[in-house]
Image (cartoon, rainbow, N blue to C red):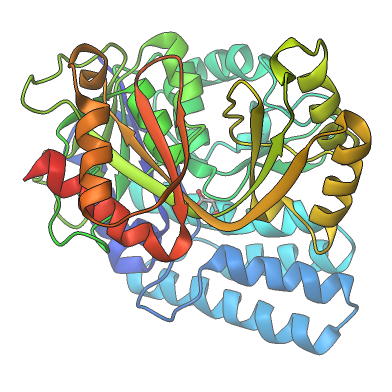
Length: 440
Ligand code: ASP
C-alpha cells in the first residue's frame, strides 16, 4: 500500500480539539501512516507558541532566575494539561512534565528544553491515534558540522520497517555528542520530509493553517492568486525569499527521492492545497511568473574599482573579509567594475559594518565602498520566465511606472528568478506593481 506522511504544524496542534481534528484527518485515509508534529502554536493572536515559552525557560535557567523559570514552566504545564483534558484522556502528561522539569533544572541544556514541545505533542497524538510514539532521536542524526547526517536515512528506513504506523516529534534529532540537537526554527517541516524519505512515501502532506501557496503575501495583496502546483526549485526560491509556508530546507530530503509535497489546510481539509512536484511544471504561456516573495532587511555593501574584471583574486580577497568574520552573504551581483555584497541584517551584529568596510578597503583597495542599509529584496519566480521574451522588460517598466527606484538587480543563471533590491519603504509598492503586471 502507498504510504503518506503527514506533518502537522503548530496551529494544527494548538489545542486538544484541533489535535482531535488532525487525528480525524489521519484516520480518514489508511495511507496516512506516519505523523510528524510540531509543538502547539498560537491559539489566538497574541498567544505565545509553546516553543517560544520553552526558549524563555532555557533563558531563565541560564540566567539562574528560578522565579522566571517556575512562571514560564507553569504556563507550559498548564497548556499540556489543558490539552489532555480537552481530548478527554490521560496520556501521562503530568508525569512527563515533572521529568522534563527536573531534566531542565539539572542542566539538560537549551536544545533539549526547546525540543520538549514536539516531544509532548507527539505523545498526545500517539495516544489519540492509538499508535506508537517513535522518538526522532532514534534515527535523526547530525554530523560533526551540525548538518543532517546521511546515516539518518538508513537508520530511519530500518526503524520504520518495525513500525507500520507511528507518530514522530518534529524539529530535533541527536547530535554527535549524544545530546538532543534541533533544526532551525520551523524545522519540523524538515523532519516531516526526512520521515517521508525514510518511509519511501508516495506523498508528503504538510498540514498547516493556509490552503497552500499564494502568488504573493496576502498581507500585501488582498486575495492573491492561489498556486495549484509549483516545482521544487520554485518552492526553494520562494520560501528562501520569505514565502514562509514551508521551511526553505524541507525539500532537500524529499528531492532526492522525488516525493511530491502537498500543502494542506487542517481547518479546510477539503481544499486541494498546493502540490510541489519534482519536475518543471509546464508553464502556462500567459502566466510566466509563478510567484513573488521578498524580505525586507538586507544591507548592501557596494564595492567599486576600475579594472576589477582583470584583477585576478579580487573576489577571493573581498570574500575573505566575510569569511574572517564568519558572515554569510545572500547574493553577489557584479558589473565590470562593481561588486555588491548583499547580507541579511540578522547576520550583522552592531558595529560590524564599519569593520567590514575598513577591512574591505585594506583587502582590495577599492575606488569607492558605500553601504546601503534597509534594502528589501523581491524575487519574481517562475520557470515560465526562461522561455518568454520580454519578462524583464515588463517587470522593470511596471516598477518605473510605479515610481520605484531599483537599487540592485540580480538574476541567477537559472533564469528562474529575477531579484530586485529596493528601499525598504518601497517594499509593498514594489510587490504590488509586479503582482499587477503579471497577475491582473
Ligand atoms: N516548534 C518549532 C518552532 O516553533 C519547530 C516547528 O514548529 O517546526 O520553530
